[in-house]
Length: 87
Image 1 (cartoon, one colour):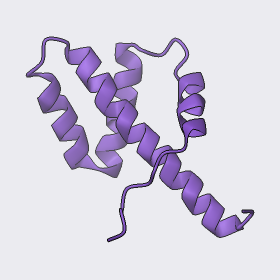
Image 2 (image 1 turned 30 degrees about the vertical axis):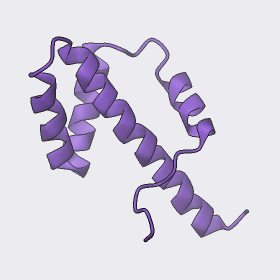
Image 3 (image 1 turned 180 degrees about the vertical axis):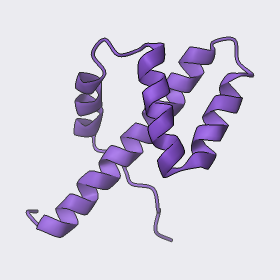
Image 4 (image 1 turned 45 degrees about the vertical axis):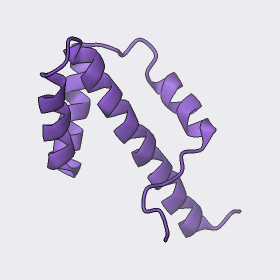
C-alpha cells in the first residue's frame, strides 16, 4: 500500500529552519494558523484545540504547525519534481 503522506527529505528541514529564524512568536503562529485554516480547516481546528489541553500552548501549536509545514513543503517539492522531471 502506497503511503499518501510524503517522506520528508532532510533538506526540507534545513530549509524550514532557515525560514524560521527568529519567528517563534505569536504573530508567526497566528499567520500560519490562518494559512492552514484556508488549506485544511480540520488541521487548524485540531492544532488550536489540542494546544489548549497542554501546559505549553504556544509550543504545542508550533509543533503542529511545523509538522504541517514540513509535509506541505515536501509535497510541493514532489509536485515540482514531477512537473519538471529533473531527476
